[in-house]
Length: 236
Image 1 (cartoon, rainbow, N blue to C red):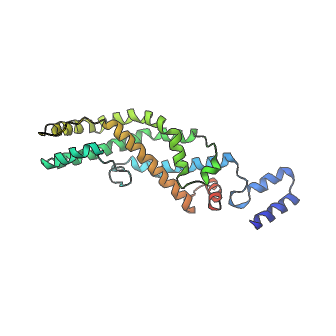
Image 2 (cartoon, rainbow, N blue to C red; image 1 turned 45 degrees about the vertical axis):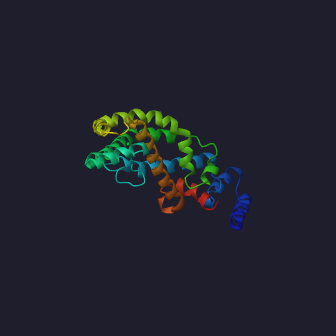
Image 3 (tube, rainbow, N blue to C red; image 1 turned 45 degrees about the horizontal axis):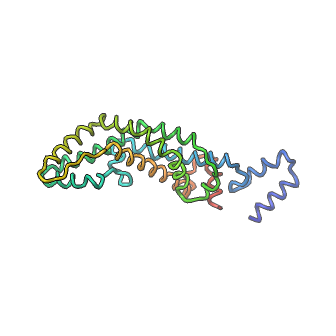
């Protein structure tokens, strides 16, 4: 801190007014960064989350083999899973879980531009407080500002993906067979809504992974702006 004050004092003595801001902006640890620059740095971190983490979800098994985001059956359908396995239809139950994840993988691939545009449009009202907040503060801010709009955009994509990957047929067959088991309570779940919720949760989970990485590991700050902005956090 003393070193920074001395540098600033020397700058004031020898630099003109027009040059002073340039000197201040080049001081170490992000001193002199504007609210706009900090906001742009946070956007870059979220963009990296989409580029480096969310795109992994779009590959085959991107959800299914990732234990952080794998979509399991909702509680009300766990009886379906158990019932089918009891009568020897375990393979059908396994396929039911797999196609839910396949639908999410396909939908995220189609909907990635929605997330990219959402990050571009987001306005950080208090970027410095977000930067100096929790390790997932930028991700949570993005979620709070965009989740409803993303959900409305994402739902039809999930619905189309259900048909595209054959999840609708698998689950129609699965539910029909389960409801035919004597003495069970019939079910008719809204799987589109459920997978939409889970897919969005998975996307934000992976963006959060990247944000935490950038906050904790200097090596992941792959632009000069990220280095400047997150140096503020390191010394905050």
